[in-house]
Length: 442
Image (cartoon, rainbow, N blue to C red; front, side):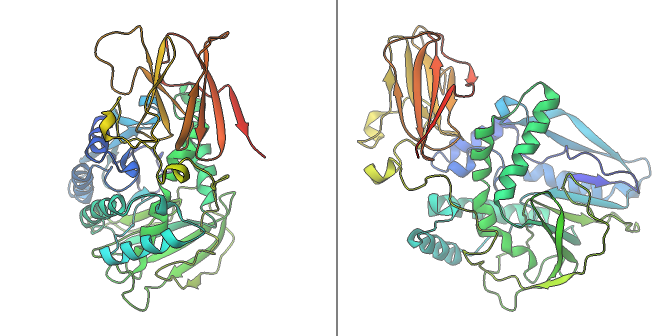
């Protein structure tokens, strides 16, 4: 979220409207079976009340020349990369000409229950499964409801919309990794590991696949006042389009809407200020100044699977423990050792060595809780720390004999990769280090 004040340079992309880390954890506990709500990003993880109060203050900022608005900051480096709201804020002063709200999910619009169920059923039968097919219909319906609340509260003030669309969503993984590495390079290395970033971005993909289309349907507050900017891998603008609303109500959301891509921006004009040159994007490279001819874009309600924006298959997605047990037994819904009566018969819940206990726990990146047995008393939720392979956990093994540097622990990921760590008797703290060994089959 950024503001464009007069003709000054665009402010840094620091402000965010996510819930606090504590509230995000509460949300995850309310939906223990919904992996999409295990961390920030998807609908439901934003603080709608905070967003409404900020937007209301911005809309009236020009009523008083001395008025200021404090924009909230979400520090993505905190809590091991999970992020938390900062005590600091970004202060903007009136008068301003244009206010720009930028975000990856801005403009997403919900589907009808019938349409969402139809797409989920169709995806289950497809040989080239989209990302959302790995989540239950109930999980997707929950996000659909959260999105309705978000759009109804946030979208009405905005009069113009700019959609930033990558030529393929595989670019999103690369761009998000670059962002995390750039942040860590300036803060002493605080943030997510590379494999955690990949798992983090995967939770965003169902949004692109299901709810991105609603931005250009009839009835949006920015109808007839929008652009789609298509970006190549190097963040260069390769095409500009003026999207038209679809000719029918197919796929029409049940409310006011908006859309994402790598990122999107909606603009509003406070009071009666004059709009100046304010076309901006979240790209880290400037938009080329070479004239580009706008083209009409025919946005279908449901893109074909063969379109360039359809994510390619993940590495070796054809084998997983879930094919042995008819489900994914190591995708836990708990954050401590659960009651054995609640588990599938093929679920390896707990393994131990003479000094450590290991058990899968919920959370992004296929987490394996690690608890030192010498720590007596009530176990800390999730153990003292955890190892994460950055993808769903298919299986794990623990070496009984201790070698130099500790016992070897191997995590088999749903991506066909085995990652190996050495863990000493004291265990680990927080999210564990990078694996010492990564094994891939041919």
